[in-house]
Image 1 (cartoon, rainbow, N blue to C red):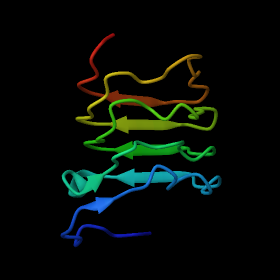
Image 2: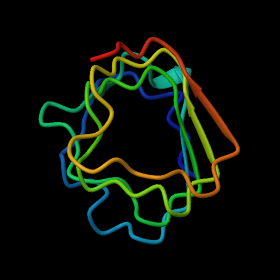
Image 3: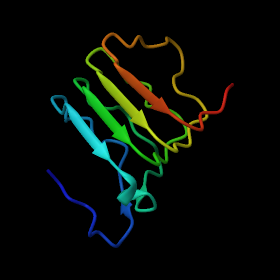
Amino acid sequence: MLHVSKIEDVLVIEETVFDRMTNLQFLILDECLRDKLNLPLGLNCLPRKIRLLRWDYCPLSIWPSKFSAKFLVELIMRANKFEKLWEGIQVKFYNCIETNCFYVSKH
C-alpha cells in the first residue's frame, strides 16, 4: 500500500501508468490527493481486473477508452470532473454493487 498523504508536491502521472498493472484489483485515491495529481494526457486504460475503484476528486473529464467493468464490484467517484464517461460501446456493470458518482454532466 502506498501512502501519499505526506506528499507535498504535485504528482505528474503519465497516461501509461496502469498499462502493465493488469492484476491490480483495488485502487483508492482519496481526498488527500485532491490537488496533487496532474494527468496532462489522461489515461490509456484502467487495470483490467479492477474490482474496487474509489477516486475522489478525479481530475479526468473522460474515462479511458480501454476500460472494462467486467470485474468491477464497487465504484465510488465523489466530486469528479467527468464530461463524458465512455465513447463508443457502453460497458456493462456485471457485478457493480454501488455507484456513487456526483457532478457528472449529461451530454
